[in-house]
Every structure is written in structure tokens, then in C-alpha cells.
Image (cartoon, rainbow, N blue to C red; front, side, top):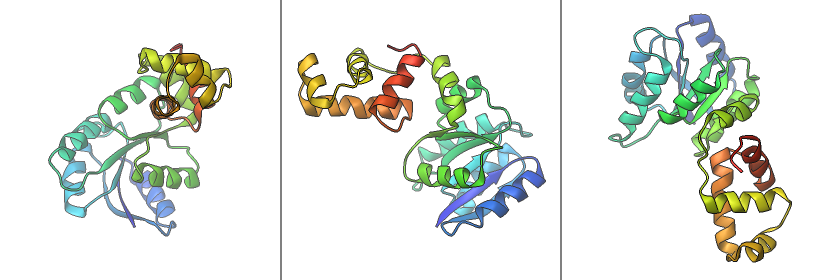
Length: 205
């Protein structure tokens, strides 16, 4: 069972999200709060796995709460992942949230089944960002790709397979696969071609 905390200063929103998530057989909402300063104490008190946190809250914003959760995780036996769930879908917020250690960024009109699936993906170690915001977010970020990853991504964009990329760049196939995995992770893409296309659209290639 994935144990979830909801942090939102609007009680109606918290109640709606809790009702939707509690319909899932593998997700349980174990705590709720209306301010950012309550988040970390509740995580510790209820052994929370995933904290779904709004940005605009009293005392402490959701972005500040994400940073506090990251600091808490450095000393905690059981880490908690933070996912921002907000009305304010802005690329700058996404960039700040990720820099503060958040593992996801979703807008509140995300369909319930997608929200539940995002919780599962984050619980399994993935980072989840609202698809419609990904291109703007990547464009707002400095390129995280190494020079070698840029070369591999350019080859992947042309449709070349692993063996062809290895031959063109004088690498082993294993090294190419490692670079491709890194590129996919950095772009939060589903496959190598999608990752290369997103890197191109962000101006990284």
C-alpha cells in the first residue's frame, strides 16, 4: 500500500483528491494538511511514501516544502517523495520544484487515473511531469546532457539503432546503451527517439 499525504490549503480540493485516491486498491491517504509547515512533521508521524503538495499555501509554500522534504530525507530511514500538484502550471515552477528535489509536477486538472498512475510511478523511483508542460520546462532549463550524450542523441534522432550509433561514434554497444538510458532519464521520455526529439526541441542538440 502506497501511503499518501495531501497538502493543500483548500479543504474541498483535499477532500476531492482524497476521495479519488482512496478508490485505488494500492493507495491510501493517511494524512492531510492545509499549510506547508505541517508537511514534514506529518510525514514522520504517518510514515508517508508520497506527499502531494500544492504550491500556494500559508506559512510555507509547496516549493519550500519540497526542499524541506529533501533535507528531511537525508537523515531519515524511510524517504518520502514529493509531487507538486498545483493550478499554477508554469515552467519556472517546474524548474524550481525539480531543483528542490520534487519527483513530480502535475496540474490539478490531471485526470484521476493519471494522478493515481503518477503516484505509482514516483513510488517506483520515476520522475513524472505533466506532458503538456514538458517542452516548455525543458526549454527553460540549461542542457543537462554531456557532450557525448549530445552526439548519441543526434544519432538516435536519425533513427539509428544501437549498433549503428556505436559504429559511427566508435563506442561499444554497452556504452551507447548507458548514454541512451541517461538521456531518457534526463528528459523523462518513454524511449530513445522521444528523448532525442525532446532534447532537440529544447535546443540541447
